[in-house]
Length: 95
Image (cartoon, rainbow, N blue to C red):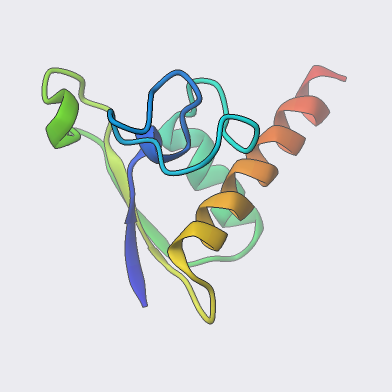
């Protein structure tokens, strides 16, 4: 099943009213489409990146989004997995 992933869905800097889907503890600070794409590529998850698109709730920001293929997983579980992978990638990059 294909699903759209906007960075705001996992962004800890945004409120749930602004579009965040995960709890603050599960979220990532300012995730970028590039980071999401990298972790999906490492997991060999098929996806497409749309760079110059804006989330409707913040139309002035060209955050972009990703269309990803998710199998046997709810959207929330998929977002949690992406956030965990970004957090671990950031820790690895710092070292």
